Length: 186
Image 1 (cartoon, one colour):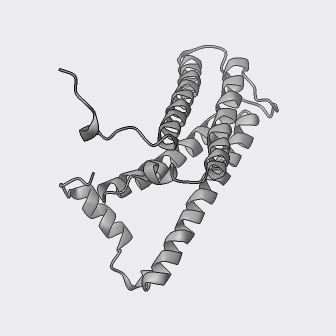
Image 2 (tube, rainbow, N blue to C red):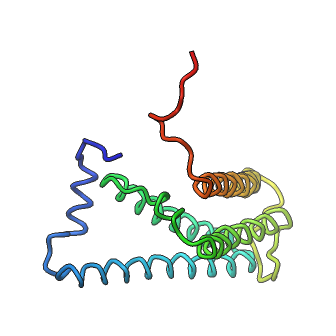
């Protein structure tokens, strides 16, 4: 559902994109540019996850977390922008072929799970899977905070994966009834 308000964030997004610019070309060029942007978006996600996995396995803590946060920001910004213009990205994603959804899910959620597992290993042992020297995490508030963050991240990933699987299954079975189609019991 498209929101009726057009606020400062919308105006800032319009200025950032400059969609009326001649640099987007004609309809065909714009379509190709949007396809290319999507390709770059997906490649960035996959490469960021790969780098996050490698750095987490090496016992680094900050870089993998920053990369996952940037992936999240990119995804959130895309969904926010589309939603403000009446398009639900999740609805489009669930229309994809099962193999495409499975492969993307395995790469994204599998990669994030490996990152979180490697972070957990580092946080709880004090060194990476491949020990290149890591920070001292034997005690203190930092160690406790990091342990809590890794456990919370794992739980959040699991909840998100289950939620997406349930939503995907509902869509495959014909979808859940829309809000205005739900029978209310008196």
